[in-house]
Image (tube, rainbow, N blue to C red):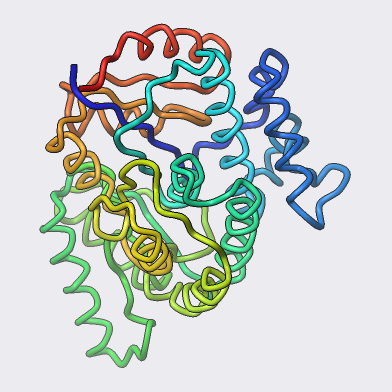
Length: 330
């Protein structure tokens, strides 16, 4: 058999009720939610992370400041429940990776960060990103990466000629989800211009319901502040290879992992290259751990020869546990 990777979802995978089935049926998941609630300081009542996961409301769950830590909470609870289900016989992954905020979840699972530090970092990251200057994002379908990159450069050049200053002309690819599913990010006017050109050239552009230009230079102020926070957090060397969004390359050294995470917020998410890197290294089984099935769908589009599994509720957990308990890693 080949190698095993665990991957963890990012913003957009949230839904009201996520994680409740796991908490109801697995003591390990319940205990993980309780631990995370204790370290997520400043939250009480309806704003407690587990309450937001289980009960919503949806409008609150959609807020970046809540979405990011709740998705991480469900992902860590699901991972704990899977380990408990396999009673110590869970195969250790050769690789872990996460999509955007999921990278911090991956770092925790790889023993780089304590759960408490991971929660604090995601809470800070979410707060910084929610308070960033106004921006926009749009999903783009039916365009190849190079064609879309060239289109963004064309829009930037046009806007600069029209007098745009600084980040007023900013538009670039923020998420390389698959070769045919991309996300652009930047100044709202630049995004509008780019979407119009995408449609003119036969592509499809779908504005996303976010108020920020995530993974773009409009995040540079937030990224600088986040880097200062990271400087005071203890990182350990990883128990397995962590493939990071910044360059889609794996690493284990604490200093390298921290340096790349510091750059992530203002850099594109290279998910296609991340999956390709792991497959080239021998991965043939990928388990998405956390709410939803977004990453599973992306992996299938990137390489349909990879075995994919999910862990997001009791049924999916038991099916995955049975499947991966037979995976032998050389």
